[in-house]
Length: 446
Image 1 (cartoon, rainbow, N blue to C red):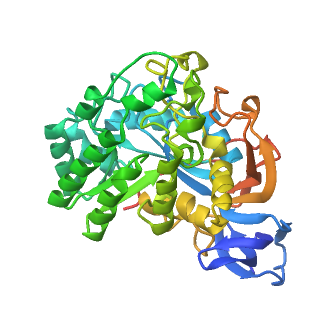
Image 2: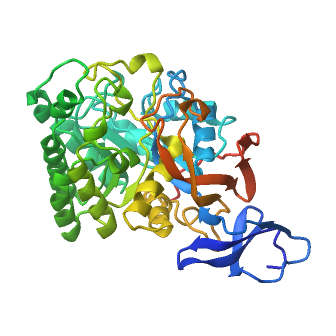
């Protein structure tokens, strides 16, 4: 490591082989070696001694709605990437909605990239969208570098991104399978949703009844059957229904190319604690009961669920009315995801090594960035979060970097304070102070 420019030293470094005291050497933004803690410092290298703070790979969040351009008052690349950096996230992949235009053509992708170019504090990639009328755009988008294609099986909530009925879904999946792309799916069955009871008003119980578990279960069963027939790669987004887990486990055991994510809000919040009228807790699928949450944690532990991502989907405060039927559905949690998951994980006996696997290693694998991201290992980008895992803080919405200070985590005391975040060997935030944007726009690796 004679040419190392920087060495980060900690008594607790999370590596693929385990947590250990180590010195991590960095050259030109890349990890060049992970060496014993007391390895001699190379001549000219700068030492960053982190003491007992944990050095972990920067998180990779593959499910973020930045909403820029078009609904920038809801969020934006500047605020979203600052919030991510403050929470230890060094890479995010932007959803193709709720921006205007949506990322459904190559020209729309170029628009998105132009807007993001000088605003990204962390690295940013992009999903494309699969709509009923854009099958011919899917391969060009794939060749332009999107990481895969988002589709809804039920209405998305915005008119410019319609959902796929059975025929359009089959056509989109067949086209994406033809070039071995990845289809990522909001899986709720529209017919089960339309037959569920619907009542307006502030009662959370009424909203929960309007998005039943069997809407997810039915849609996931359909996806599995389509994926099996086409040998397609399919990823289930934001799983909330524990009842779908046996279907998923069986499909995986049968060799179906299926992966699954869940979200911090499903793992840390429960229906029993949602106050009536508190639509900051509204999302689709919904936050379900505590017993259901236990099933999700068991599935994370046994690998049925692959990863944890935020599904950060903010809006302006005025859209979060006290009527659950009409309020915007989305949880703002980008800056808080690591702390929220870690707080509940430690209570359930999991370690930070598990959290890193769910929120960094496997998410990097999902989008094909694992040669560069998701681990502290030679050859990877020098992206790090420095965490004080035993320190706590109480969530003050006004202190968050999100554009709109609305969050379901308000007032909660969480474990895990991010002391600093590093991108390719450069510290980009520490103690609330940010550098100028240093993020890059990422494309899918061949």
